[in-house]
Amino acid sequence: MKYGSTTKSFRANPGFRSGFGFCRLAAGLLLVSTLSCRRQSTDDLLEQAMTAAQAGDWSYARGYAQSALSRDRNSLDAQHLLGLSHYYMDEQSRAVRLLRQAAEQADDDFTAQFLYGWILCENRNFAEALAPLRKAFQLDREHRETTVLLARACLEQNLVEGAKYLRLLLAHTEFAERPEVFNALAILWINELEYGRAHAFFQQALRRDPDNPVVLQNLAVLHDVYLHDEPTALAYYRRCLSASQRFGDEVRQQQVRDRLLSLRRSRN
Image (cartoon, rainbow, N blue to C red; front, top):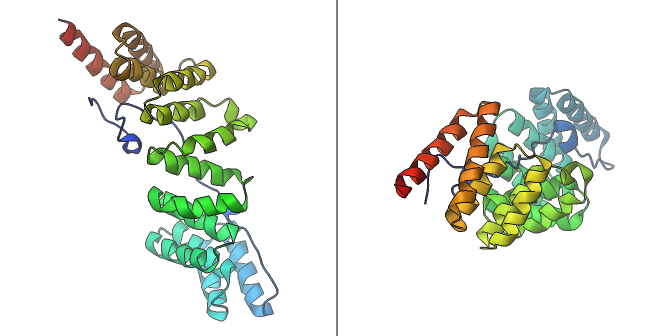
């Protein structure tokens, strides 16, 4: 059964909403330098590219990085900086190509694998992003942004593998109190037909944010479509409607009103 607009992320369960934000990384975090002893002129160009990138001057960064790469075709730093410059200048195909080449060149380099996985996620190619992100995770299991991206890529494809990465995030205080992580875990268990587990995680999400309209809507759909518990579903739909009104979420309000009307008609 399908009603209302849905997120593309969870095609198998069109009523559910993840509420799980995508990791958009700041330029400073992405610019991981691994400068080694090359010719001084190449190093100078890379440092100028780095300085320009950190200042947000991506056109200059691109020029310096391109010059550095012309001097040293095997420079991972130059490829990374050039790829990021293309990305921030909205030249996506060039960014993906450069970061893919860097990843293929350096199979055991964390930064190369992470950046390639990241750019693929930015371009919503989550299936292809899994391979480089898994490599990055094996190379550095403590890198939180890699774990976030892996969780996201798995969620977008309804892969229960994502539960492993979400649990790792729960070890960190900043994630342990966020309802989005528990909500995402619940959705993954829905895909596995583990409705009891899903319900438990939705409840944990709700305890952290009792008025979260996304979680309330998901609980309503769980009881409505999967558990066939209409009285409980109605209670959650009404709470969701009230919360959506407080947040001014007109789209969600209309979805819930449409479903409540459909249930009323079916009873009549």
